[in-house]
Amino acid sequence: MDLPESNPAGYQWLAEKFGAAAMPHWKKTRILVRGARRLVESDGRQMEYLPAAQDPGNGVFDQLEFALRKEGLHLELLRKVMVRPRYLHAPSATFTPRKARAATKSKGRLRTNNGLKNSSLFWSRHG
Image 1 (cartoon, rainbow, N blue to C red):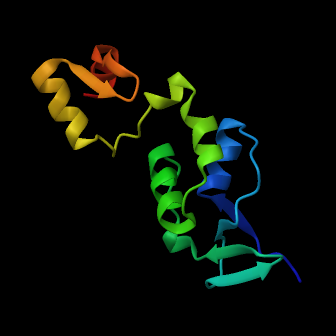
Image 2 (cartoon, rainbow, N blue to C red):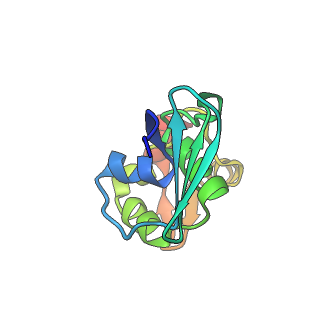
């Protein structure tokens, strides 16, 4: 079978962007340069090819949202990507979490799983 000309999307895009190696996920998604949607199944894994109109773009959070919607959870890869502090504070211009914005305006601090962290550097760049 000939592989169509395509570009990575979702978790595969994130893994390549951040150089994170992880166990293969049960589903991979690629964006076709041209052509219609197709789904290829082999050895219990799925490769979904989507038309260019469904390309999430080059933003980290756009790709993350796409991966969560289309490919489910890949906890190992998420952990490897999210433990890198400089990537945690680099959202795309189109993404500003509503709760984080409200928390920052009211308290000047952002609540995370690790406790309270001062977010003034983050919000000075992205506020």
